[in-house]
Image 1 (tube, rainbow, N blue to C red):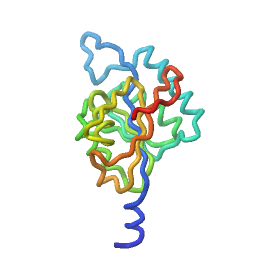
Image 2 (image 1 turned 135 degrees about the vertical axis):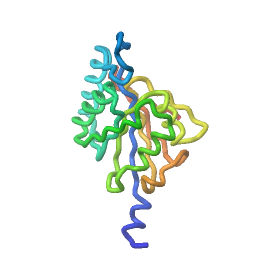
Image 3 (image 1 turned 45 degrees about the horizontal axis):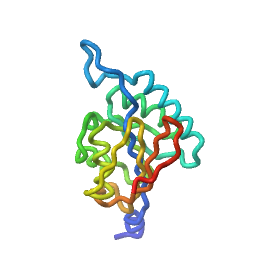
Length: 179
């Protein structure tokens, strides 16, 4: 192995998992996939982005998002604040924790700070499983959980992450410790 490869094994990575904002109920003839954020979801998203703007750690290298309408809107707002590109991924739509993990494992190795915007129950289940298979983290709409791990994205697995904090900025609340 080269020293560059060894350095990558020890790289500290940050993952922020975000549950999309509150969506409007389905209208007649509308698919679940195309449901937009409702007015409360848009208002909460505005409050969240204002709080993110005020934080010193409001940057990221990459943002994964489900390609559903409500996650795209959430991701676009967060991406503009965090100044990072978005990669829409159809496989994240209503995905379970294993599918979401697979997407995270495909993150390019040169990215160290990644955000993923997804749907419940999969996003909340993954948040707990990444830290400890016995832990449950229930994210509210626009809830954020921050986790870290050392290693390569391709080697990320359940129980490998260190829980940092959960955030719920939609009502301008402070971080809470979920331990």
